[in-house]
Amino acid sequence: MVSKLLSIGWIKQFFKFGIVGVINTGITLLAVYILMNLFSVSYKIANPIGYILGFVNSFFFNKHWTFKSTGSIKKESFMFVVIAGVSYLLQYGLVIFLVESLRVEQNLAQLIGMPFYTALGFVGNKLFNFKNK
Image 1 (tube, rainbow, N blue to C red):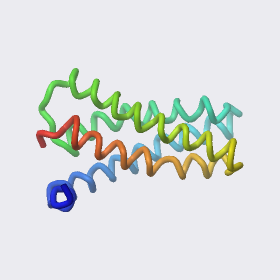
Image 2 (image 1 turned 45 degrees about the vertical axis):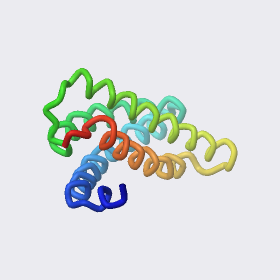
Image 3 (image 1 turned 90 degrees about the horizontal axis):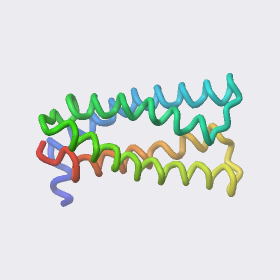
């Protein structure tokens, strides 16, 4: 497994996944911060809205550019939703824990939760969704 993680193909895909992730992060953070700071929307509502916007962008760029998948859009989008859902719930729980239990400032808590979401999303999609590429 370790040799696969260090293969050129995985490294290239992880790099592309990272670029898509940076774009998605920008979309997500922009939406979350605008909703929280300009419109006084609770972070518990702003967070899922931001992630949904980043998610839609992520699926299309990762399917067509990162993994160059030609598989069934129905199957892959379903698995993408499942993987993103699991990844999202873990990061969302972390954000709530950081804010409410550890009293971390809510903007910082959003930033801390993102790397967990990203890493889980890449590994999940590489191993279980777009695994043929």
